[in-house]
Length: 556
Ligand code: NAD
Image (cartoon, rainbow, N blue to C red; front, side, top):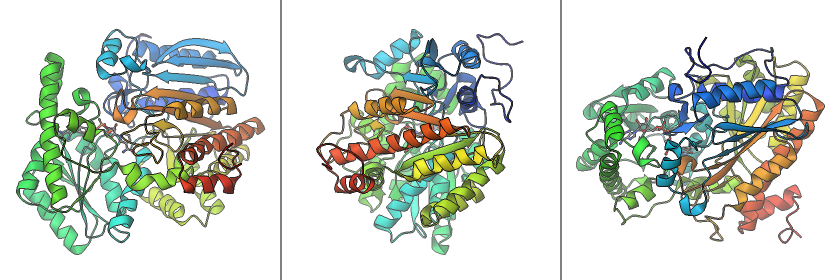
C-alpha cells in the first residue's frame, strides 16, 4: 500500500457511481471534486498536485491531500472542515445547513503580499498557491474557460467585425489549462488563429482533445495555412511550436497582418509560468531550479521583447487586448511603458457582470456523460428564449471532450442560476440523473473578485482595488448554506493583484438541498449586481430594480 504521506502509486481519479465513501453526498462531492481536480486528464501536472494556471494547486502536499481525504470520509453532516492553503487544520461542529468545507488560500497581510514573501512562506511549507478553481476544487478542465473565451472572442467580433470572426486572423500564445481554450473559441466564432506554444506536450494535449486543429514548428507553413483558410473564410486553428518572444518579433518583422492579438502565457508568474526565449521547457526547468534570479532576468527581457512585437502588430492594425494574465503589468515591470490597451473585462465582459451573469458550471458525480446531456436538455427546455445559451449547449455537446467527471459550463445570470439549481435538484430527486450534481463557478465572476488588472479594471467609481466585495460574497454564501466556500489571494493575475472567492453547492435531490440552492444561487449573483450597482453602473441599478434586490441607498 502507498504511504499516506506520498504521491499515490497510481494517478488519482474520482470515484463514479452512487456508492458513498463519506457520510453524506455533500462531503462525497467535496472528496470527488478534490480528486477530480487531480485526475491526469484534468490536471496539468497531477504528480506535483498542480491543476492549472502555472502553479495552482489542489492541496499543499501529498500528506495534506491524504489527510483531507481521510477527514472528509469521517466528517459528519453537521461538521465543517477548515482548510488553510491546502492543508486541513480543523473540524468544528456547526450545523447541517452550514458549509461542509471552508477554504482560505494564499492570503497574506497587505504589506507582505508579494511573490517574494509568498515564495519564502511556501518554501517553509506554510502556504500554497490556489489559483482560482484549483485550490477550491471546482476546476473542470479547459471546458471551464471555453465558454468565457468563446463569449470574449464573440463580443470582440460583435464590437469590431460585424458579429463574426470569419475571414479574420487571431494571434495568441499559451496553450495551457486556460489558454488551451483559445483555438476552439476562435474557430467556434468562425475565425482563423495562430497560437504559439513552447511546450510540445501541451500542443499534443490540445490536438488530442480537439481544441486545436493543426500543429507545426514552421512559421512559413503556419502562415500559409492561415492565409488559405482566411481567404476561404473557413475556421482553422494552428498551434505553432515556438517561443512567443521569438515568433512574435519575427511576425512583426515580416509585417504579418493580424486582426486580433492577445496572450495567455502564464506571465502572471514570471518564474514558474513564463518561459524565456531560446530555452526549451527542460532548460527552463533546470535554470529555474539552479538560478531563479537569472531566470527572472531572462523572463523579463523576453516579456519586453514579446510586448514590443505585440505593440508593433497593434500599430499595424490589430485589436490588442489583455487576456487576464497580468501581461501589461509584467511588461511594465520589464521596462516597457509606452502602451495603452484594455483588459478583456472592461472591453467585453462588464455589461454581463452588471446583470449578475457569469461562468456557472456543474458536474455529474455519477461519471456518466448521459447525465450531463439530460441537464443540457432540461436547461434548453427551461430557457428556450435564451438563444445564445441554446446555441452554446448544442455546440458544447458536439465539440467539447469531457475531462475527468463529465461537466458543463454556461454563462447564466441572476434568477436563471437559482432556477437551474432547482431544476437539477429535481432531476436528481426524480432519478432522471444517476447521482447528485455539483454546481459551482469560476472565481472570475460578477460579485466574487477584486482584481484591478482584470475583473475590476477601470471601475466606474474607481473602486478597482477595493477587496471588501469578494469577502462579503464569501461570507454571504457561507450564511446562505453553500456546500463549500473559499477565499483566495492571487489567482490568474498573481500574488498582490487580486482577492477572490469561490462557492460550490450540491444538488442531492433533497428538499434541504433545494432550499440551500435557491438561497445560494440567488445571493451569489446578487452580490455581483450589488457590487456593480454600488459602482454606479446604470445597467446594474436597473437589474437590481427589475429583480427586486434590496440595495439600501440605491433602490430605495
Ligand atoms: P498554464 O501555465 O497551464 O499555461 C501557460 C502556457 O504558456 C504553458 O503551456 C507554457 O508552456 C506556455 N508558455 C509560457 N511561456 C511561453 C512563451 N514565452 N512562449 C510560448 N509559450 C509559452 O496556464 P493557463 O491555465 O493556460 O493560464 C494562462 C494565463 O491566463 C495565466 O496567467 C492565468 O492566470 C491566466 N488566466 C486567464 C483567465 C481568463 O479568463 N482569461 C482565467 C484564468 C487564468
